[in-house]
Amino acid sequence: MPNPKRKMSRTRRDKRRTHYKAVAPSVGSCPNCGEVKLNHNACPSCGYYAGRSMFLPKK
Image: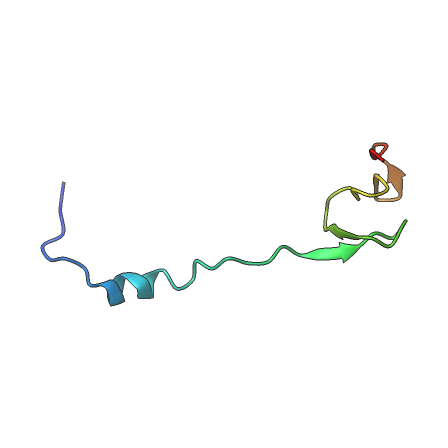
């Protein structure tokens, strides 16, 4: 199996890794209660997703 002949410099290594960034999750507002929630997830405050009740939230 081939191995590298020379040590890769920190600059060259970091240039390759520039595209791996932490991205903030996309959030939206719940159409039922108006609270902030993650997109494509049930609302944690009211329990609704796509206009239907998925669960009863804990108070």
